[in-house]
Length: 203
Image 1 (cartoon, rainbow, N blue to C red):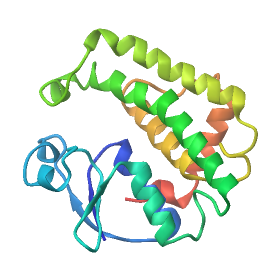
Image 2 (cartoon, helix red, strand yellow; image 1 turned 90 degrees about the vertical axis):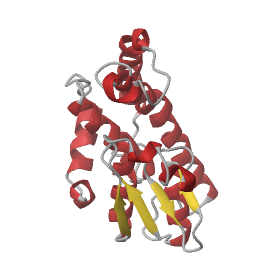
Image 3 (tube, rainbow, N blue to C red; image 1 turned 135 degrees about the horizontal axis):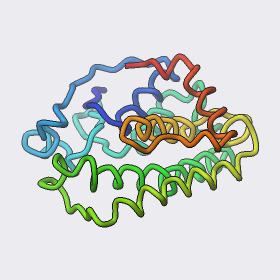
């Protein structure tokens, strides 16, 4: 397998996931700022033009971070980061989806439509007037997670893909003017726990 990667929170999720698994893959670094991911030959391989992408041994491509991580989990089930039972896997997928739609998506688009507009306006439809609202929606999502955390990790006692995804985006938020509010005590403590893991320093 070969990982096509770049800067940004989405590649960060897969990098941390691989580190938690103790796996090292060959990597190809894409020039995201230069738009290498948005033109051929990369778009012939991955037509969504997104990073990261996983090239499988048969030459086919997997895009989308959750699909990539689920494939890796099936190939390398230990340590489990999605789950070992249908119930655990469902719970992880539930929290991963919550982190994605409540925080990651609005945070990322809030950035693309504002601070990131010079880079993204020629690559995708941008709605600058939506940026302040999207940033507020992301903060509402963090507040919701604060109120609904029931253990040290999002899925209770299990560290999972959901924690990795949310961490990568909250970390990213701190770099782009959407910092984690100190008032969210549980989420700040959770963030510190994830940051202390060796995978948080993986590159």
